[in-house]
Length: 103
Image (cartoon, rainbow, N blue to C red; front, side):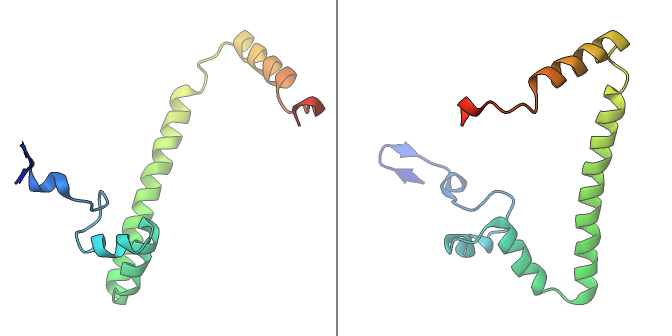
């Protein structure tokens, strides 16, 4: 497609929200958030498909949880006892203190 002196690919002109089907474009103009669009689509599903969608969402959150646990396990034990004590001391000295002048 030509716009002025420039050639532009039609897909570059899309205002569709990333990751949403093209049918969501018109609804996104109505000011609906991604979550609102998803909930609206879920309400239209028959019970078997709704159960399938719930399973998919649950798997997504479980992957995220598994990733967080894996990161925690990788970082556990990386500090020496002295480094851990120093980190704890710095946190205790510098955190959770209220300075009335900052308000």
